[in-house]
Image (cartoon, rainbow, N blue to C red; front, side, top):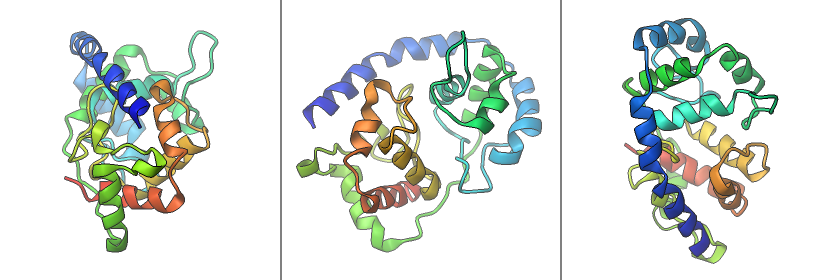
Length: 211
């Protein structure tokens, strides 16, 4: 628990420099809109509000986080992508760094049409995990990094409020199995490794209902 909290503080310390770099990055919102409407639309919708729970809602997502994820899907300098996804790998292959900055800025500015929490039985446990964590299992409160309302924290922690519960649960499970391994300092892999399937379902459902 203490180690995880310390990691969160360490990562948070790097945020100002990264945010400054993002602010200086050149963006072309008109081009980003064109890419969104021709390339991204099929999975995420033209405005980032995905029509299917298998794909994340990226409207209103933290700009720095979006840029990082796009870069992580991209193989570079003879090295494999940090985040493995054949579909996204194909989508980002032709994107320049400016394109990725532009898309991140564009989608971060779109209004989110949030998902809903549907299973009331899961909400109480999800709320407890989000706000308090699970001390006995060494699981920190989700709110510590993602915020009490799930708004996220640039540049390391994404917005989870209103995200499809199915998508959040899938990502937690892939962190748990290390199929997804692009989390700084293995933080999410460590945390997800301590979560049961029931806990994952509960916290994902709770996040879906946050605003």
